[in-house]
Structure formats: C-alpha cells, structure tokens
Image (cartoon, rainbow, N blue to C red; front, side, top):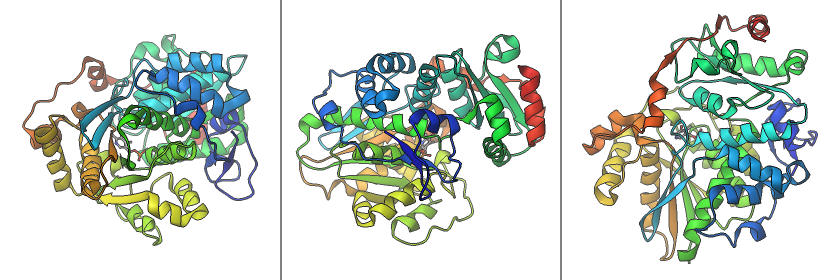
Length: 434
Ligand SMILES: *Cc1c(COP(=O)(O)O)cnc(C)c1O
C-alpha cells in the first residue's frame, strides 16, 4: 500500500516514508492511495482469533514488501500486551472497550503499533526522533510506547503547567531515551513548533525528526484493526446491518473506521457522535465547515472546534459524496444527554462507561429502534471511566475504581528543559541532551 497527500497531484510514498515524515512536502495529510480488499484474510476469523494474531495477519498484507509476516508477528507481540474487549449488552448492542492500554484511552492502540513498527522498519541502522506536542496523557502513551526502543528518541513538548505520568528513569540524562521539554506557551504553541520543525527540512533531516501526533498515518492505520476485531466478535449473530458509534473530536478514530470499511469489512454505517462543538455537523450535512468558538463540556476529548483530520474527511466526501452521506450519521449530544446516557448504561446494562463512550451510546440508542432485526451497533468506549471519575460518579452514584496501572498518571515530573516556542531554542535543548 502506498500513500499520497490529500493535495492533488502529490508524490506517492511508502508507509515507512509516510510515518517518518509525518507531513507531506506538498502540504495536506497522508492518506492511503488505494482501496484494498482484504476480506479473504479476515472473514474466516472468529472469537478464537487473538488481537496480535489478527494484527500479524492483516498488517503484512497491507504493507506488503515493507513488513513481512515474521516482522509483523514481532511487531504485534511487542505492541500489544493489552487487547480490546467486546462486551455484549443485548441482541443488538455491544460495547468495544478500547481503554485497556497503559494510559486508559484508545489512542494507546495506534501509538503502540506505530512505535513497534518504526523500531522494526528502522532496525538496520535507522534512527528517528519523534517530536510531539502533547497534553493530557498522550505524552505518557508515547513515552510508554517508545520507551527503550532501539534508535528511537521521543521528544515531548508540553505547554505551561505541570507534566504528569512520566518516569524520570526513562529520561535521556538518566540513561533512558525520552526528552520531555516544557514550552513557555500553550498547546497550540507546541503544535506550531512541531509543524515548523517538520517543515525546516535541514533541521528535521539532521535528527531524522517525525511526529507522533494523531495526524500521523502510522497511528490511524492500526486503529482500523480494532474495528476488524469487533467484526470477528459480532459476525456470527449478524444477519442485518452493522454500525459503529464513534465518539469524535479530531475524527482520527472515525477515519480509521472508514479504512476498515475500505479493506472490505461489511459495515453499513458509522454514527459520528459529537458534542456541542459540532462545527463538523454542518459539514456532514453538505454545508461549509466553519469552526465555532470552543465550548468546554463534560466530554473534553471531543472539545475540538477545528478537527485536525478535516482534510482526510473532506477527501472521502469529495470522492463519493452520496456514499458518505449514507454511511455517516452525525449525532450531537449536550452535557445533559451525556449524563443521561452514563446513568442509563449503569441502570439498564450494568456497565460504567466514561462520558465519551456515553456520548457514543446515546448515538447508538437514537437509531437502534429503526434497525431491522439481526442488526447490531458497536459502541466504541474510548476512555476508562476512572479518567472522568467525578462525572461518572455524579451520573451513576457509583464510586469508580482506578486500576493500578493508571495511578502513575497522577505523579508530577520535572521537564529536562524549559524553553520559548522557538526553533533555535528547541534545537539547542535537543543538542544539549544528546
Ligand atoms: C481522543 C479521544 C476521543 C476523540 O477521538 P478522535 O480520534 O480525536 O475523534 C474520544 N474519546 C476519548 C476518551 C479520547 O481520548
């Protein structure tokens, strides 16, 4: 499979080049160049197929001469010591829990695969510096995934405030490979610095710099694998439509679902659950996309006014507008609907969701009655309920237990440099560590 930019007339690149550059030189974002029918490789899989088995079967077919089956098996084993889990709620409804990784959010799946596949692809003498603007626990996820991987140096740019969840023993001055740097500024300043660095080719090439932000296609492609995994778990009892309900912010998760569909997964539609920051709702209805001012909600990961995957979304819609209109059902929830869905998940089904998963459940329930018998909706539970424990308790009256692996996320750490958001300051800080 080859990749190209969303900008027309761009050069074709390999997967290795796409993940090692992160952003195409022509501008735009990398997308797969072709549609690949992979049904023969996953249609026979069932409940006995483990997640690493699925990944090591599908990934080498996708990446062909870039990743042979033996390498793919190594990647899958080293990336995934956690798995998704499909929980059946009733005949028509399931929840796919994607929060079993080290930081309790679905992003662990894409980041872990990207780290493992980069190490494998670059293992004969390759090096990479993985520069990322991070907030919340994404930095911890990246640090975990790249920790002690050969030739890999993750540089994490944090905005002002405190850095949590990192283990100082993994930092470069202490013998590890991680460089956390605090930026005097906001998350947007960090993001701008990453983009400036990638576009400053002499600097980027000197250190083989790429980024692990959510727009890297190396994170999006592997997210398609858990959609296929869900399919292997529901297919036996499926005689009608299959839909996925996806809580969406920057739309990386939903795009990955589209990829699973282009691989031949029999799916009839996606519910794009959004909160009141739904500027994208207009876009789905064929109107122009105009970002609105941001509103804070109880689903913070969906508080996005200008989704970073906009261009990828738009390229799907340009290619097949009517197909897309029939595939994607936008669903908007306000905080009250989110709270009600949290409560209902507990009272009716006996499960605790996080607010993002609850928003997706709300979307699923809105169409459940219009589906034929034998149809099924899979709700993606993207975050562990303990990460939004206060909201979950308020809605359900339950105390939420934090699993031991998530305790470290609260511990503060000291960055190894504090700099202004400027290229020369960043280069100086990096040079002084190596
Ligand atoms: C990041 C995140 C989302 C949104 O995912 P996108 O790919 O940005 O649409 C939803 N839920 C949780 C818990 C998240 O961390």
